[in-house]
Length: 324
Image (cartoon, rainbow, N blue to C red):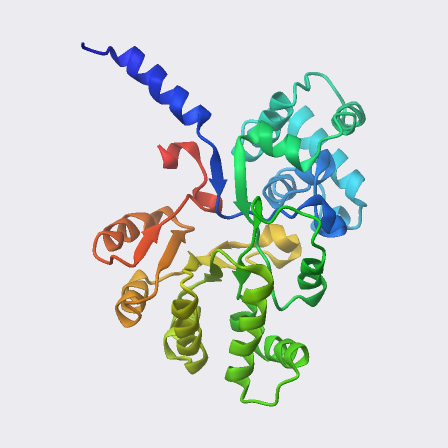
């Protein structure tokens, strides 16, 4: 029996919309993590995509904006980007999609009205995940941020839903401090590199991570390929059978006055990624690029290296026109 294109489209959409999502890269924490768990309309609006859009469109300086409290920041973003302008950016449409999903009519409403309605929904983690059709997710966990890492002492959350990862950026951007943290936590008198591996061992036992991860640019790659510590880390990752997630091509602080909203696109030489795959054949690499210019080369490399897998459309690549 021949199936029409319309029937096929309906069937595919039905399958996609009813398939549970495993979100492998988030910055979410369970609500029991309290101050580290962000939710609600205020936090939704105070996201770095929207902050950057505000600061490049509205007549307000970054210094003035960051002097406001969180509620006034969100109020200003709603006024400037959603009321005074047509909210057509992907960032704005994301907020409107959330409100729509929660059955909140946002037309002609000010921030206070919307915020009250949002708060009255009394959304739990379970309700939000159900509405999102997300079965489980991977958090971003920094083992060198002790305040954050101590949250793992709380066992009152579902680790099958909120799974963990090990974010190792501090070993690149702030290595000396990361070593000090590891020393203080392990109380072992060893060589610095051995201390790091021992600390990662203890973190693995506590959190059972799905993967380790770093954000990197070309300069970082040179360091990773030549640093004896990273050779030990790759061996450790292979032993634990977890991949390294590489998020490539970020440049921090393109406009430092914007804070977290000021990061942009940096250089990445994917020839170095190919060298990495060849140098550590037993390791698995999950890779995403921040620039469309790198995406084609990344796609080719994924057909040449069995230990390289592409995932997602990260950050500035998360645009429907690019994804399509």
